[in-house]
Length: 347
Image (tube, rainbow, N blue to C red; front, side):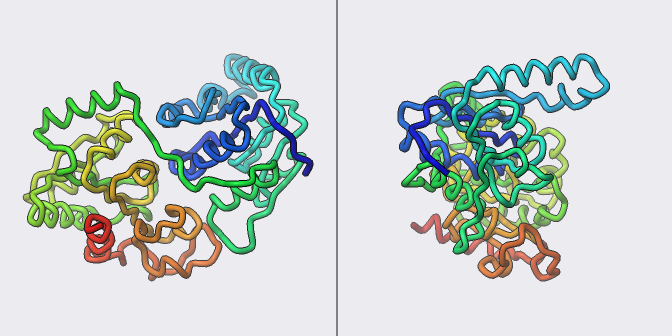
């Protein structure tokens, strides 16, 4: 496609949290290529606080998915959708990048009226019909970030930056500092465990997280801190029930910026393949993410094999998820996880 010096760019990537984290490096890449451009990100409002921890973004466009969900039968939801369309059209964007690749996100791109709407050839639900340009996945990589980089190169970005570090706002840092003091936890002297996930097949057994808590307490004197949403508290309770070592339960007590701040204060993070785990990877703290049948070559940390724990992590092919029984998360051992996290701590 013909490229130009874009001045008003919209990025469409409304969800989910882990997928948004994967896409964050497009921000510094676009900023370096188009330093004077206004960069706007369309995101679901529950994930928007994550973008408060970035520096290259100018504006956030909130997508109220629940509020518009029944637009076809609810006058109030239809009005919200109508107003959202006006907002999209009023943005007067000269470049729209749809990194979600679904029917809804492609429709939003079309609603902008922008003449340059770029998406991925692998987009689903006939989304490609609404793009002016579609970009294929590189032949030498299956990682989703390399596909995003292919999109960027198609619009004139010459150099793609593989990382976008997260920095929590001062208020979040202060809040976490107070919570750690209340629990008598010293910075860099505790391990954060994330034993929950939206999908059961992504959940490593709670008793193995409990074993990690025991090992770190015995070897280093570190307490374990469990985080997650309020609804995920049973996972924290299961970890605590399987160990006599100290476990601090902070489930339901941290906002997204506070999670970023907490990970920055932790000595290490061990997580299932879930959004908060990928956030931890965007900090400087040693962290590993445990994968089951989801392909870490596709959706794992980018070019950081030391942060991946999985069976056959380097030989999964291009599929997002497989059904190979040997790849199930229960086949990941405690020693596999310990080996990866201790290796990082040793450095």
